[in-house]
Amino acid sequence: MRAMRIERYGGPEVASIVDAPMPVAGPGMVLVRVAASGINFMDIGTRQGRYESSRTYQVSLPCTLGMEGAGEVVEVGAGVTRVRPGDRVAWCLSWGSYAEFAAVPENLVARLPDGIAFQQAAAAMFQGATAHYLVHDVARLKDGDTCLVHAASGSIGQIITQMGRNRGARVFATASTEQKRAVVASRGADAVWGYEDFDQRVRDATDGVGVDVVFDSVGLTTLRSSMRCTRRRGLVINYGSVSGPVTDLDPLELGESGSLFLTRPRLGDHMTTADEVQMRADAIFGGILNGWLRIDIAGTYALESVHEALDALESRRMIGKPVLLL
Image (tube, rainbow, N blue to C red; front, side, top):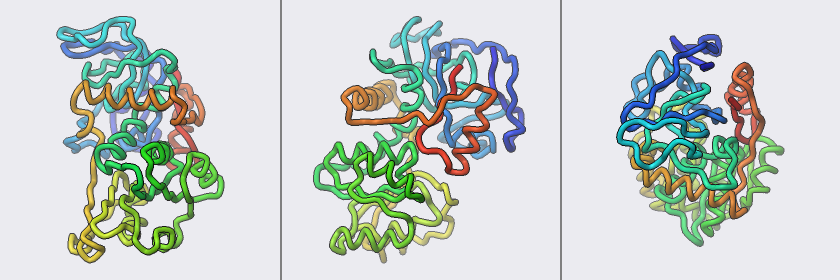
């Protein structure tokens, strides 16, 4: 089968399209004919070796890239009971989807409802599940809450914005350009600003109180300002570090900022059972089918052009989710 693999870590040059052996549906595994694969920042991190020593995401060389996909089950391994050949499924956090076939743990696959196409599923599973656990499990947003979403034009940010509004929260957001801010506004944000003085803008919009929750995927350049615009005993969720990691934070700063709570969660710890995976998938795809959740596909790519999409993601030029079609 055709696959994009890496034998060493580095830039785009280390990833090559090869004729790879077919994966095997071992015990507890499902063999899927991949129809579409999500293209993600994590694929860049995988190629660069960022997860080499990760305990949450254990991936090592050699590696077939791609950690999100959708397709049809063609074979199941011993002990598999939830799905059968012919089922339409989607998954994330299982590497190997930049290929014509992938072997995926049964507990990570979710069955797809009628009406959700493979490429829509591949565009929605990872970012949708991430937004779902952040909004529902970590922030626990409810009617009347207030929140700030950074990088809200990104795939996850757009979904958080829509999920927050669907929960009845008041949603403020940041984005770097007028074009991106227009997209965020169309997703229902109550106000969208650039990054300059966003903390003061939030304070002004909340009568000096601050928001209940900040969703911060930017990291280094925003985290301390995020703390300044969070209400007393509020929550700051740092779930990414696009601008770089914060390595010098003194816990005392949380106290001085109003006895804040700060967390750095990961999706892998919120997708630990088959029931949890299916529950999040049902919520995502149900939102799409019901019309309140919109997830745009920024473009479709072949294996030979995946690097174009990854480069656009890394340089933050892309709005929406790119998808690889196999």
